[in-house]
Image (cartoon, rainbow, N blue to C red; front, side, top):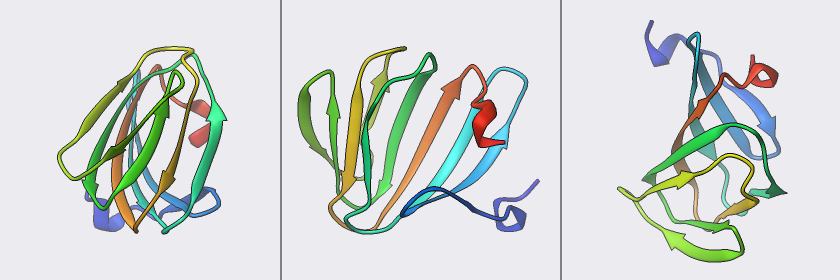
Length: 103
């Protein structure tokens, strides 16, 4: 498989993801439009977010920080979180278990 061959899906406004699913995890390569927001939410999935490019404002458990290329955030299961792309961004997310709704 090659990322160039995966058609992106707009999962929410401004979040275009190339999705890869294994048996126990999902890996998402996001292209995020400037000012695109993901509202506060939580889910059973453990998540790890990596900022590849851009500047991303992220709130985890009520604490807001600004993240830059190379930053990694571990998001435990069921902890409320939200985010906003302050610039166009490239992010990677890993989820376990699989995000079935992203298939």
